[in-house]
Length: 462
Image (tube, rainbow, N blue to C red; front, top):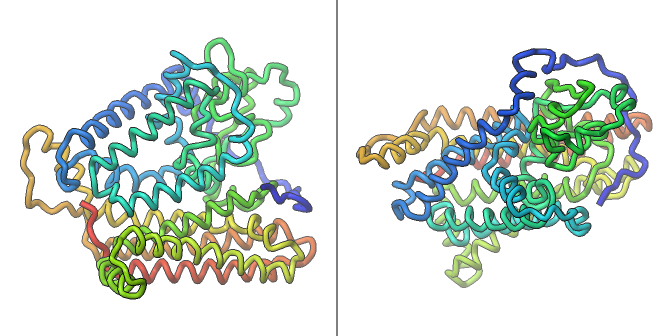
C-alpha cells in the first residue's frame, strides 16, 4: 500500500561520489564469469553439511555443529553483512543457488503472479511472524531436528518456486529473510546506481534482460529506475551486461538510503516495527528471569499451557511497538496534516537502524559468549573431544558494554533518520521539527527499553 501522494522529491544536488568500479581490481572481480559462483559453491557445501548434521547428527543442540553453525555463527553475522554489503548474502545464499539450478533444469519461467507482486511483502511479514512464533512455541532453535525441518521446508518452497516461476521469485516475493535483508539493506553502506545520461541512450536494456553470456537481474530490478538497495543483491549481472559502463557502485553513510524514499509503503514500515517486536520477544525469552515471568503469567491466566502463555507474550510484544508507532503517527498528523497511516508509512523506516542495532546486539551475546562452540562441534565431527572447554570469546561484561554501545548508536541513527525523513518531506512547510518530535521520543523510548533488557542476565543458547 503506497502512500506516496504529495511526497515531494528531493531535488537538491549532491557532490559526485567515488565510483568503486573505477578500481580495476574491484571491477575485474565483479565482471569475472566466476563471480559470484566461486563463493556460491562453498556456501552451498557448508549448507548441505549443516542440514545433514541437523537431521542426522547429535540430538542435543549443545553438541550439534548444525545448530552452532546456524544460530551461533550465521544468524548473528547476517545483519552485520547487510550493513556492510547490503543484500550480498542473497547473491550467494544456498536457497538462491538451488533456485537457479532448478530453473536451468526444469524451470517453466512463468511470470510472477500479480497476487505475489501486490501482496508479497505481506506474506513475508506473515512468514516472519509465524516462524518466530513457531520457533519459541516448538523450540526450533533448541532442537537440531526442528532447525533441520525448517531449512528443508524452506528448500522445498524454493524448489517449487524455481520450477514454476521466473528469476528469483522466491527471494523477491516470498523469502522471510529476503524481507528482513531488504529492510536492512536500505540502511547499508553500499549503493548501486546507473548513470541516467548513459542509460537514456541505451537501446539494449541488457542490464535487466541479460545477454548471451549473463542472465538479467535475478531480482527484477532495472538499475536506471532503482531507488533503493532493498532488492539489489550485488550479484553484478548488470555490471557484466551493461555495454556502456553505466553502473556505479559507491559507498554512503549508513542509513542514508532511508532518508528520502520517494514512495513509502505502509507494509514496509509495518515490517520495520514488527522486527522491533521480534527483537523484544527474542530478548525476553532468553532472559534468565523469563521462567519467573512465565510462572506469574501462568498464575494470572490460569493455565500452564506454554502454547497459550507464550502466544499471549508474543502478541503483547508485537503489539506494543506497533501501537506506539501508530500513536506517534497520530500526534504527528496534528502538525503536518498527513493521515496517521501516511505518517506511519513515512516514518516507519526510521526504526530500521534501531532494529539493526537490537538484532546485532542480541545475537552478539550468542556469537561472543558461545562462539567457540562452532569450532568445538566442528572438530567433534572428527572425534576430537572438547567437553568442558569454555565456549566464550569475550566476558559477559565486555559483551554487555558492546551491546550498550550498539543500542546507543542505533537509537541515535534512528532519531537522526527520523529528522532527515521529516526534513525531506516537510521542510518546505516549516513542519520539520514538529513532525519529527513524536518519532524522536518513540526512538528514545524503544532504545531505553532495549538497554534495560540487555542489563538483565541472558541465558545461553548452546
